[in-house]
Image 1 (cartoon, helix red, strand yellow):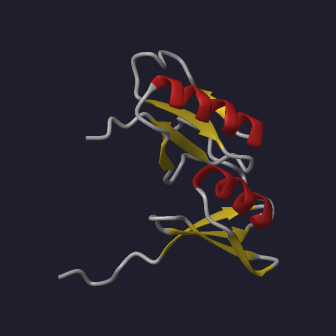
Image 2 (spheres, rainbow, N blue to C red):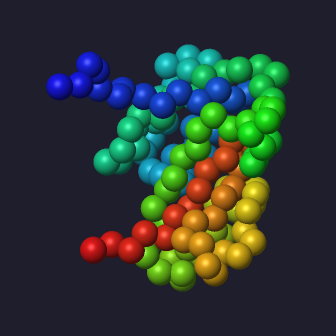
Image 3 (cartoon, helix red, strand yellow):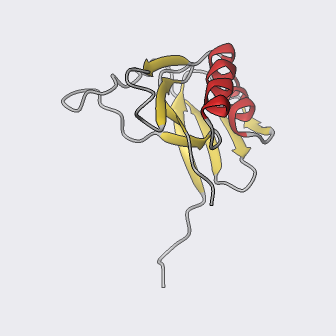
Amino acid sequence: MPVARLRSVVIDCPDPHALADFYAAVGGGTPDPESDDWVVLRLPDGPRLVFQRAPGLTPPEWPRADRNAQQFHLDFDAGSSWEEMDAAHEKVLALGARPLDLEDSEHKDFRVYADPAGHPFCLCRIEHA
């Protein structure tokens, strides 16, 4: 029996409204601003993402582990075909994502990006059974 259920993943960022809009465009849902400093996004069939204002945030340096390392990242199912991956790639770039690791992308089933606030996230090719 679990002690508690996961309610939210809270992400620090300089502009909660802008980052919530970015992730709404990537994963769906509608941002619900509770204040200037706190915006909730309920992903369809997924967790709540909450964006919390953190002035002066220094984004992680991917893939470093020795200093200013990422503490977590989000994985998104971008489809089961390379065509779907390529289409998702173009869409996240248009939304303001920045590629962090596209090398050897034909042999890996994921691509790593930074969101507009600098947090790493992945688009994953998932073979659906």
